Length: 134
Image 1 (cartoon, rainbow, N blue to C red):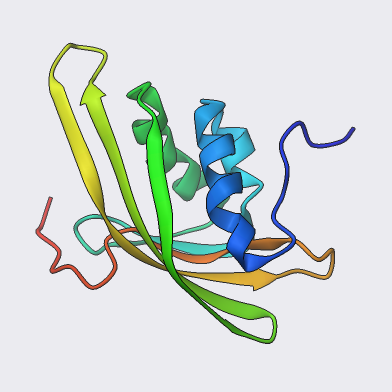
Image 2: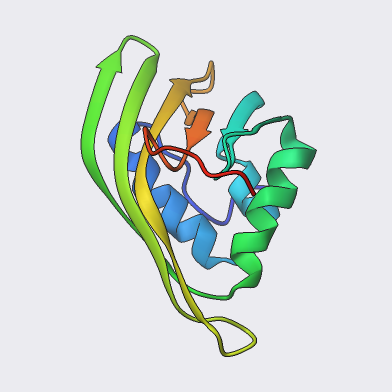
């Protein structure tokens, strides 16, 4: 069975694939962008490893039902590894009607797999921002 959404074959394609998959509202579509040994850094600085933990974190944002906006500011490539600096936001009224504003400047690391697809190795959506305990 083929993927219903594109997978990035260049590091510059990661943001477009991320937006497309986020818009699907399906965490399983998002997880195709993560290496099996990926790490996600939470807003309070905790490190989450493994697909199950990362999926649970991503599910919270997907449940908001709001669009993700993301734009690459920088893409630095060294062989099969790339660093992406992305400005991103999720804005609007959440399911309960309350105003939602999430965003920041991510500093992510992606790696090209043997299949030629670039996937998240480190998802650090707050970049160098000082983390506040949850």
